[in-house]
Length: 125
Length: 507
Image (cartoon, rainbow over all chains, first blue to last red; front, side, top):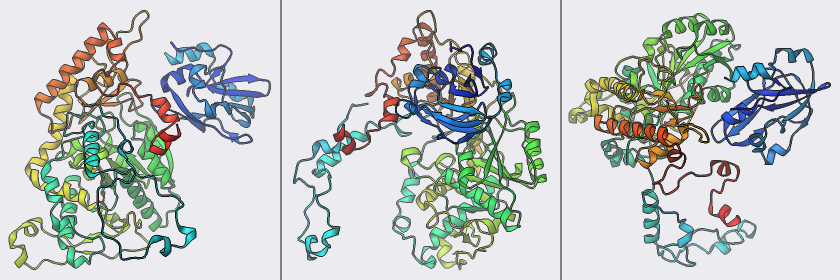
């Protein structure tokens, strides 16, 4: 059974968002990594790029499929988790500890359209 | 299957070779080539005798699995048998020994094959013209979209940049549209697995270039609303593109042209019995409706010829109009898509196949392919989950095992495990984890070339695997047991590919 971490916000496209002040960390859920299988490559934007809610900001490749990453919120990329370049399997090991992007939130109200943990858990069933 | 894991380099002995050449009259390389262009050291090629080479590749070939070895129910791929008469015809020196730059007057037989093939494919598909220049299915898709774009452009309608693609489409469809510089918009499927007409309507507008559809779709289901979809798209000024990957069940029964499609491609290496996959190359002819003729890529064979007079021995005494590569309109054509006229050897094999089975029997291809798929589906649905239970066309999708054997402390058997276990019984695995609509997708396409006995043997094995999973899923987790290599490490292979001798030496 896929784990759902409480305190995070979730998108229907299986990305999670963790809000810290005016910043948000973005990653993929345990359900997503489980469905993908062994992740072999992660394609992420660079620092300073702007991502737009609902549009793809990168891709995850596994031995099974390549999937677009869809931005759950809009904002400017402040930091990228470069550890994923060489060790993308971190996403399989702990998808919640290993965030992908740190973004400066452009519009905090966008968070309202995301699911909380219980709603996401129900969504995955 | 005999295990063999040598590389040709393993047999290399310095100075050994399989030929002798007379001393060259030309000057030595050391003096003829300027110093700056000479290589510092000899290339690292294997030095082996002829018998080493023959044994090495014969041994390697015995580790291969193909339609000549066994049943190959790879969904979405139409792995039908490739009749050997195709090879005989393609090997005829009059065809095999020609040069692509020969004057057209000297290759009238080849031109007659193009013209005859165009006539036959037009009859089968309801299109008016075909170009044979694209060298593969995805190349055909790109060419079709270039024709679509060329047509809008030729009318001065420059704002049509949007291509609609269903969520069940082959991955190549959005990829081809993107390569063609068009924007992809996805239309959803409804609960029956078909294009949702209500979801489609708001996507139609003056920016629409066209829609790409596969019918039957990737779930093996016939898009029943196609007439309505065609009317809506045409009304909005768009064109309909038909992805011919799934043409097999329609051959002889339904024509894309009659459904309202304007452009389509065929995969000769699927529906028309030419070698496929590693056995290629492929061929992706593109058919168009009459109004799109000027947008075809060039060159294109002009002049219709009657197959029967071309093929008869009386042909030599008859005056046959010269078949030429006709003029083209630079303002309208989609341009050139390959150096010459595609993979002629492949087109010739498909031509041989069509003439072999003939007008009468070609009508049986689709119905038998459909019957075979439904036969397997109905006999296996007691053991495998069937998400869409209606009558399928040439292929269908299971969504994993009904009883995967999962229990306390034991993971259930997945679709991957079933596919791996099939190898132990001498069957090629079906397509797995595609389409993405289902999590444990297992997609089976038997084609019309398999006998009832082969289908029954496959069904028995699939039942046996299901029973094993229910009893102890670990039997499946560890499969294949009888293959030279059990489970390759896909993850390491993808992350650290070792693909040649130099890579291996560097390890």
